[in-house]
Length: 111
Image: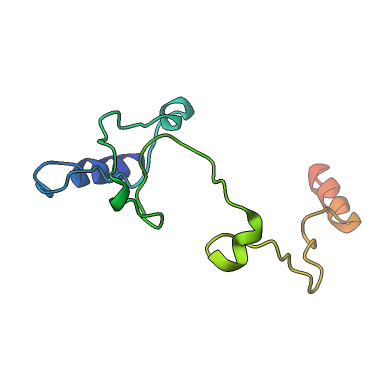
């Protein structure tokens, strides 16, 4: 996957791919945590304010955390949900039952 994304990144940002393009488009950053926290490219020109698209599938710049008021979620319709599933037992399978515990013990004991 890393090699595939690296190749895609190199193609998207090469001079021959789109000679008129002035900004870099990276499908993702890859590397160590230290490498991706800062701008991995190191050569990205700043993106002009009028070309910033919050829905863009590309990444650029330093890593930053989303700073969005969770109360705005109903208006944005883009970010997760704070409305948990309440129908049925949604915790089923998250915890070991005594039956599953006994089966695991039997398997471990070669029984």
